[in-house]
Length: 458
Image (cartoon, rainbow, N blue to C red):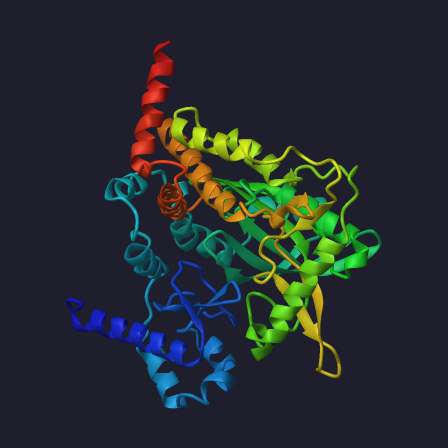
């Protein structure tokens, strides 16, 4: 039991949220991600609901109001109001700690936990977002962003944060004079500050605004899919005490249904799932030209291509992981030059913007946003029966890469705890499958440090 009445009330609120979500058929998840609408501050302690890959706070009164049509048939409005009252305000940092400290340490070796705590600030990206990036952007856009607009002949009149997550913050910006491109004027645009530089998605490794911009161009070039991506007008860098953070300026897409403000019950219905599947099928049915220059978007025709590239990122000190990956690679067929390349988003469900037709009987896609995790693969890439093993090795490879970063003392911006947990869970899975012997992340860091020491003595 919690040690004081205040904490008891907070825990009671979480229990009420669990019951509420269970009765409404929701899938529960805990996360440091933040969502808000109508300028609601993301400062309430709560359980969150994972809905089609998107996260919403059950303490968010706007979200509660939007989902009332689903909930009222099962519980009363009084219970909903009670839930809101049982989730008292808390600082963004407290909200971050409430989720992080309680859940991420499960299945993680204690020595690995201690190492994560000692890592540099830019490896605690959710905390940096809560304490620094989000508050700064609520006050004003940085000078570098204003300069980027000025270079395009535009000027910022007003800005407002419309969504914040642990890896990025999204700002809507009104311009006068408007930004002009290819004969069109854009008086409202989006600025995204991208905190993360390391991708949690299985087929991508690094994030960059140039990758996102190129993937958006490729998506817009596939006219036959009937799907478009926002136009990216400019990219740049912000430098602060935590290091470098990328930003981009892109087209504002107006839609009835967007990932940050779910306003329709259809968002979690069979219709929404069918919409996502239809978009995926469209991209798989319309390959890119094999001769297209797609850099810097990663490109892998077959799982073997991906595994061979992944091996280059695993440190020399991780000899057992490299040997296990070699064995997996040896069993795969050589690259096929006949594979038709297709563009994959990797997170469609959480980034689909759609509107209903005037008759309200059919949804159509306005755009797909946030292409930073995009990759290009062969059309039959996922037909391989080793795909689950490939996913596990992807998590292990990122953990091994970060172990070497720890040994060198230089990290990409990331949520280190997330990657360490993924590494250890995947390592245990691969041990059960007979691929390797489990090593904690802390032990892997020791191996990397010892390897660094020996090389420096040579």
